[in-house]
Structure formats: structure tokens, C-alpha cells
Amino acid sequence: MHIRNNWSPAEIKEIYDSPLLELMYRAATIHREYNDTVEVQVCTLLSIKTGGCPEDCAYCPQAARYNTGVDVQALMKKEEVLEYAAKAKEAGSTRFCMGAAWREVRDNKDFDRVLEMVKGVNEMGMEVCCTLGMLTEEQAKKLADAGLHAYNHNIDTSSEYYGEIIHTRTYDDRLQTLDHVRKAGVTVCCGGIIGLGETHEDRIKMLHTLATLPEHPESVPINALVPVAGTPLANNQKVDVWDMVRMIATARILMPKAMVRLSAGRNELSVAEQALCFLAGANSIFAGDKLLTTPNPTFDEDNAMFELLGLKPREAFKEKETTAQYV
Ligand code: SF4
Image (cartoon, rainbow, N blue to C red; front, top):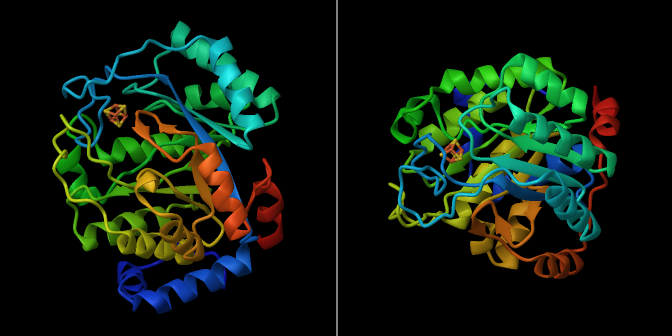
């Protein structure tokens, strides 16, 4: 099968709606064709600037307008961040992601400090990723020059449902930043969240947007909402594991080479449920006991799970090798 980016919504719906075990089998087969299924990418995510965000994303405890008890913290010092990165590397992470609760990047001293952090982590031999909000093409180039490997910018949901969740920016703003990231030669990390109150149709449309980008994102995080008290979505229902499995399997079939990341909400899943997600094609996780501001399994729990399931952490910078193999 070739890598396709001309999927039609009807084709995606047919895959998404197929009987679950058939869907998993098909996804697992494609996963074996394109990836080493024993390998799982282990990423650590650190919030380098927390809370006080001017945006109104309805799921986010870091939005200044919601009363969620998150402590606002200014941008961390470079040395502190590098210390965290060194610990993450020692614990087995090969990708280090730095998240700042900004609407967009501004050309100021804080950005200069982030560039220094990127440089420092890159020099440690880890893949560096940032998620800093909207970016201009020039800013993306500066990050690339500092050694940035990936930029995370999620589309969250379908373009139709986006306006129900976020009112302070548009879907097109998101796509524009993704375009700036691509033009700068940085790899793209882009996925979404389920459990926001969207329909299955919205999930299919979100996957359609991702799978028909001119180039598939190299990483596709699939998040389950972690409802946080104080946010507008605090009372949303817990996402069913089978919905996660269905999303992951469909993403794997549509974007065979992408790292499909089992992201937020993993703390709610048993090892058996996570195993189903890996079988369905997930091959990346966030490690560390905190995911920005919400709980996540500890390194020790993950090590025990890897041992049980026979998984091993994927080495850094393997993308280039695998890309060459299948182009
Ligand atoms: S832009 Fe990011 S940090 Fe700000 S409210 Fe939205 S998700 Fe939260």
C-alpha cells in the first residue's frame, strides 16, 4: 500500500465504522508492514511556562479565564529545563517536548531563552519538540536553526466543531502555523482530542484533515479529554477505551508511517487497555508522572509495562531512516 493523502471522507468513514476487531487486525497488519512494532517512542513533556494563557480552549486548565487552581509560573530558567531533560534522557526518553501556555510566540527575550533551551536539549542528543502556540515562518526558521526537531500544534477536532471549543482563534490559524513549521523544515506533530462532545462524524473529519495534509504529520497524538474542574468541559463523560482504539487504528491505517501517540488520558487506562492501543497501532507515549498539569503513569510503571509487553524504547532520530525506506 502506498502512502496516500487523497483519502475521501467516505473512505475514512468506511474504515472508522468497520467492525472493531477487523479494524484492529487491519491496523495491526499495516503497522507491521511499516514499523518495528516492538519499538515505542518515549517522549517527556515539560511545561516550561504554565497557566495564565489568554486563549479560551474549553478543555484547558491553563486558560487564565477558568478557575482551575493551576499555579501560574513564568518561563523557567534554561538551566532548570536542561536538568529536567537530562533526567528524562536518563530515564529512557528520546524526545523532549517543551510546552508554553502562550497564544503565540513573540519576538522577545522569552523566545530567545526558548531558542537557547532548544539548542541545549538538541546538544544532548535528544529530539527536541516545542509547543508554543502560533508561529510565524521566521520564528519557525529560528527554531529550526536552533535544532528544533518537531513542533506540536494540534487541530484538536473537526473544523466544524472547532468553534464550539475555542473562540479566540480559528482553524485556519492552526493550519497556517503548521504550514510555517513545514516550510522551516521542522517535523510536524499534530493530532487531536476526543471526548470534547464531538460526534463520530467530527472525529472522522479531523482524521480526514490530518490524512490529507500535503504531507502527513510525522507524529499524531490522540488524546482523550481529562476533564478538569473549573473548565467548561469539567462534566464531560469519560472517553471509552474502545473509542480510543478505534481512533488509533483508523489513524494508523490512514497514516501508516506516523508515530501515533497515545497521549492524554493514558493514566485512566489499565495495562491491558494500553496493550490494545499498541496492538491497534499506537507507537508513542508520553512518559513522566505529569502531563503539563494532569497526572500520567510514572517511569517505573511504564518500564514494568514495557517489560511485560516486550516493548522497547525507540532510538532518537530514526524518522530519517524509515522515511528513506518507504519513499
Ligand atoms: S492555547 Fe494552549 S495553553 Fe492556552 S488555553 Fe489553549 S490549550 Fe491551554
